[in-house]
Image (cartoon, rainbow, N blue to C red; front, side, top):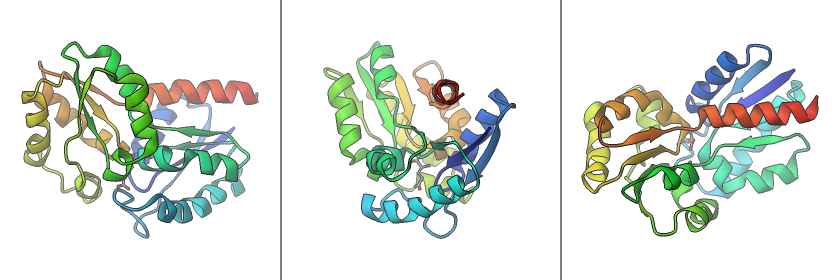
Length: 216
Ligand code: DGL
């Protein structure tokens, strides 16, 4: 069984590795959009759609039976259109607002995500559905994916955004962009004793396992 994992850049690689580790029985093909169109962080959904369609098609042409869209920016803006375009199951990744809202004791969460994700109707819907009565802080992470892709992210830059959210009382930090998985440990250290850091790899693997079971 062959599956595809797609992201604009190395964020998806973190997800592909986690899937390979958990499911050594499946073949995982990772494909990205570097350096052509990365970053997607501030691009419009229409632009991103034209970038993503040929890459997903190439994964299907290569025999993938499921594609994990390992990009919150794509999933939150385009998953409906992409599901109309392609016949195979697409597993989406979106910010973990629901679990964060149910876990927070302070009723304050911080969602780290790209500007395009934060501006998406789906993200607004997640907040509407699951975060009523919860304060949702949105640190300015506009340059994070680029810095991480270039291996130029610093602890100081992370701290600059995470500290104010922690000081404001956030006790859950959501990693709402797969690039941020690469700095998860640094964010955990900054947040230690004050906030829990949530990222979706385990949930994605569970969802993928369900989807594959339905195909079998
Ligand atoms: N890794 C992507 C995400 O999960 C976005 C990175 C980018 O293209 O800026 O949102």
